[in-house]
Image 1 (cartoon, rainbow, N blue to C red):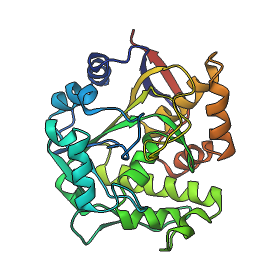
Image 2 (tube, rainbow, N blue to C red):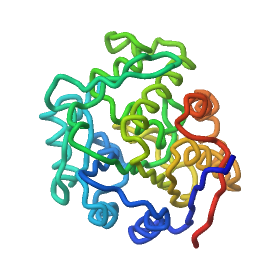
Image 3 (cartoon, rainbow, N blue to C red):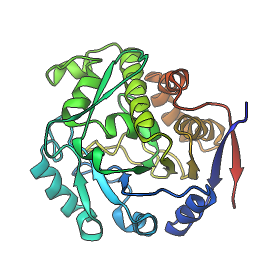
Length: 292
């Protein structure tokens, strides 16, 4: 079987992101959703709208987000819209909080490991294709955050996030942090698979490996980056691109990489990639193509 293609550049600039996007040779058509992380209030590491403006203008899509399932500046539509304005997203782009109005869109999951359905923002129905712009970094529950997390937790509604975290149940805030770790990772993979199937291949993935903190952009008080920036990757395969990012961290000679690896391994983050491959989201066997 042919390996998945993952393109890579060490250059991290607005222009290099457009270049690597064009290198894929795939055109996103129709109404395009651009899924990214708007950044929790107080977070210093999220990728800013000014940096992403060139690629978003190129694609001519709408920036989409969903509300969180935990207290903070993004757990209600009103607060989330206010933060999107404060962080500058609304200044440059049309913004859509996809679960701002119910009921949620329910995606059925074939042969899911833990979930048989996924609750996503209703407004996903308005889009024909999606660009996943992921800031690759660590995560305090998933071990790492990349394309698969954006597909799963990122696209899930506030209710859906709770459902994934509670592994197919709805619970209170504390319940989300008491589940079996591997079951949670498997639920994330299930949810990611449902979104991949929904768009039927009309998704492009770009992972930006900068500001490499062990903490996610959802942390109001995140650790500062622990290692040097690595580069930008692009692929049509979410499993391959996340695997490639993990491999690049392990291959790095930066002393700070051990801290990030400890975070990934302590949460068994690779398991999400393993299960996503089993489900058919993509393949871990890839060819890394340097475009520098």
